[in-house]
Length: 247
Ligand SMILES: [Zn+2]
Image 1: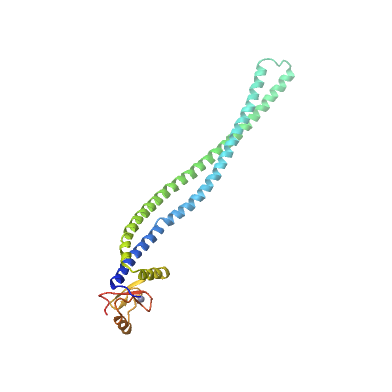
Image 2: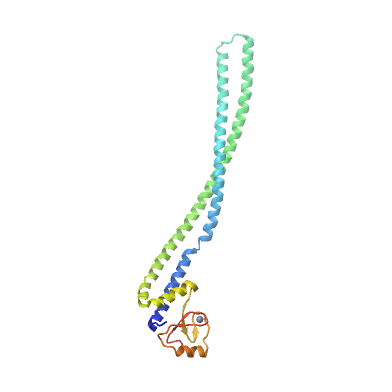
């Protein structure tokens, strides 16, 4: 393949841009915050699961408390009704009155038992609510930290995007200077090898694989026309000759 020596040199500029963009894209894809964000998201999922369970516990206990309250109120209402009847003097029969007093005593014991149960449920509910509050705070704290981390990650990504755009702005002009077959070879090598595919021959050394070229290789290159695109036999990279090649 032949290409103007100036175009061969331009290939080095193109590669410098592409390498810079690769570096920036790698930076963008691997933000410093990634590990901590992943860890915090794991924690958050765990706390969130516990929070859901705890909400169910609180809801169940709230229902239990309402029922306990209603039970106490129901028995108290009956006690009031019985007392009113006794106080009204409507019950004249002494045996009926005795039965009524006996029932009232039973109701008192029942109220006392129900109030103990009510208190117990209330204590359980308070504990459950306090645990729910702690889990809610933990989620808020995690969300706060995640917000800071994702914010800083996104800010940096946006800055990197601007930098990529800026670096790429010079690419079009270089491509315009390159013949299609040389550009095609460059693209093909980059796709298969990645990284550095064009190396400068500098001080008799390949800038890609860093190997020194021996006398016979140098003699061969010296005898090759400047327009010929030379490949380094060792690494198959495009070898670009410059004034510092040491030929
Ligand atoms: Zn090489």
